[in-house]
Image 1 (tube, rainbow, N blue to C red):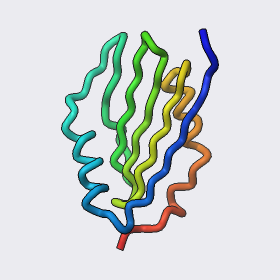
Image 2 (image 1 turned 180 degrees about the vertical axis):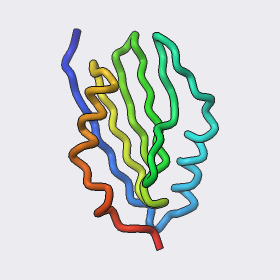
Image 3 (image 1 turned 120 degrees about the horizontal axis):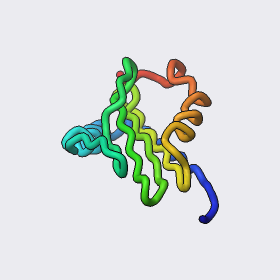
Length: 101
């Protein structure tokens, strides 16, 4: 069964906008999938470009967010359903993230 865990990574690309756009383009180019065993789909959000993924076999969930054309946030959950991982997003006040100039 193994331990449950969440990994949160936040990158600030204020000094590297080209790298930010390259990272975001990678996610935009993947074809959405929504099946019983695998999910990869965009998330509707006014403030970010976001995607979620879930593998039922591995019980691995992931949320990727591009925020204010500057920040790249990754939340990865091991042995965790996608709806459980989404609860961690409630800890972030995205309105306080600085805007890219």
